[in-house]
Length: 403
Ligand SMILES: [Zn+2]
Image 1 (cartoon, rainbow, N blue to C red):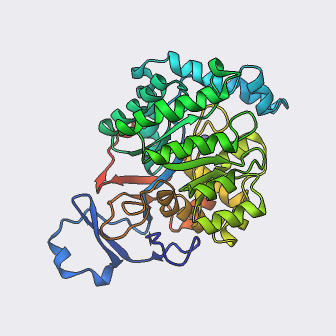
Image 2 (image 1 turned 180 degrees about the horizontal axis):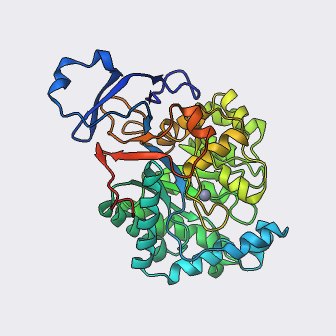
Image 3 (image 1 turned 45 degrees about the vertical axis):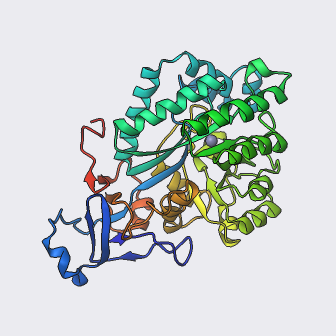
């Protein structure tokens, strides 16, 4: 079965076809359709094999990760199980700022080697494009350093990388009592430099109690837009803090988390065309109700599904697991979850013209899954179901997959 995940007809329509063929050349898709209707001119092309009644899907897209970080925080995992809240842990010196010091003291080589290993493991799960955020540097130099590491990763391995500046992730210790000073530094020094060096396409901010206010995020994202960085937002994760309204006001390409989004926020997102990025692994790890995906979809908001891979609240990059959680916890159908991890995920990172669906002119990024249908794949969940991942028409070889 070939699930093209083309755009028409909304979240639940993946345009699946049995007895279908996919034709590509030089990394680009030329044709998809019924086997029996293969155009004559394709007969001169080499055939690359038969998927043997397996499922063929567009390469999965993880549109929200915090890939480069030092250390881990497994002790906080136990503390949360024992009932200590995320905010309390942060107030005791844990949380994001602890990862900031571990990241600052890790070398470029260490950070890069960790990312390379994880990207290979993600490709083995069927992921072909990953959005990666900075945000564990929190100084001009350190944020630039992380974005440069991402830029170099693009040359070193086949998974496609889209970079986002998330300097407004947490207030660094040095600026306690001088919030305005940090916002100024990000807006006036860091953002113009990131844009000048073309190190990121997007600018993101974390609006939450204990992180940044909507006004502070507006200043940062506006500065980003002035320099050509498109805005994204961590919105309404732990409380309804007006994140969705701000994302809609600024025309953010995505509003991510939304676990606590209000009815009014949902309506605003629907009007602005912003993609809602659901991160059910984070909700699961925090033991909190996830975003109201059903209501978002019913109001016409496209819902993407991603992992939020980070060392605190989502220490897993297993995107198919996040898709399963979107089904069981958020009542998305398997087909809705698939469109959320392909076409709508591409839309959330501005890549819809290039990937996210199997259509002529797009990149030949696709995955063969050892299951007869989308429902069967998600329902009979297994650790690693892809039998082959193709990026730009080339099979990602075992060596690339870190095996
Ligand atoms: Zn995040």
